[in-house]
Image (cartoon, rainbow, N blue to C red; front, side, top):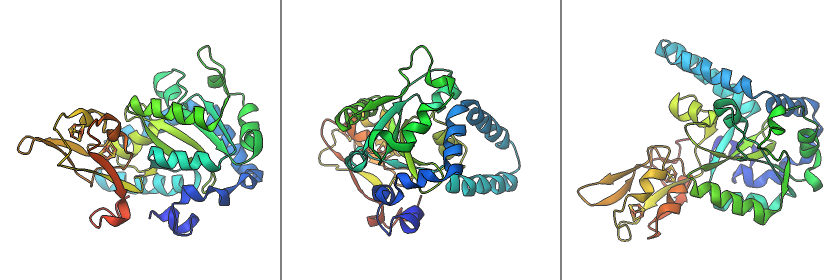
Length: 281
Ligand code: SF4
Ligand code: SF4
């Protein structure tokens, strides 16, 4: 269990306890302001990543100091965790509203509108979250290729997530002033600011998933199809055994590699049951 499970989930997966972090949390005006500012200003994100890139050239001790301070702050305001499709499905079971919006990261990094992000809420019609998003003056929501705020039912949303997974995107759940959960995103390492911070710059703004993957060597035929879908360097190919191999220290537990495996040789197991990585977040 990650530290959020202990602090906010009573020892269970915190994001599956979101009923405890209900719509009421949005009566907090500072949280509402934070969501509005966050969604209205994609360029602020791009600036943060440029600062991180400059920080890469700083002395090691300074990088460590600043990186830890960023992580501490992000844990309070906007922190994520990788979640596999099964857990996305469980979240969709208890939310009452799902709205699809343009991804703020892709807007900042590519200048393009890609609808990879989903706001979730426990209140009917999206509750206060949808009100906040509807009230935005965010031009990224109203560009030529974007349908703005799209309300989806659970089946439509799940089908979209399956398609994102086939594209190789992994899913992540996000807080807006922790522990309120306001969104689930579909990320890749090249364009998602959070993955770039966490994986490429070693400044974590998200936890690894609550799971790790493993390969069943009896089923694996060594086709290597799964390798192209891992964004975290967790998968390699052993020429000696002619099988795929997972280094669980680098596995974020997204489960996306399973999509590529026709042999169903890859499965997820609870991180807490693997002593070598149980405390690696
Ligand atoms: S896709 Fe499946 S069969 Fe192919 S290498 Fe990966 S685990 Fe093995
Ligand atoms: S090995 Fe599979 S589950 Fe682990 S990070 Fe890579 S794609 Fe995700």
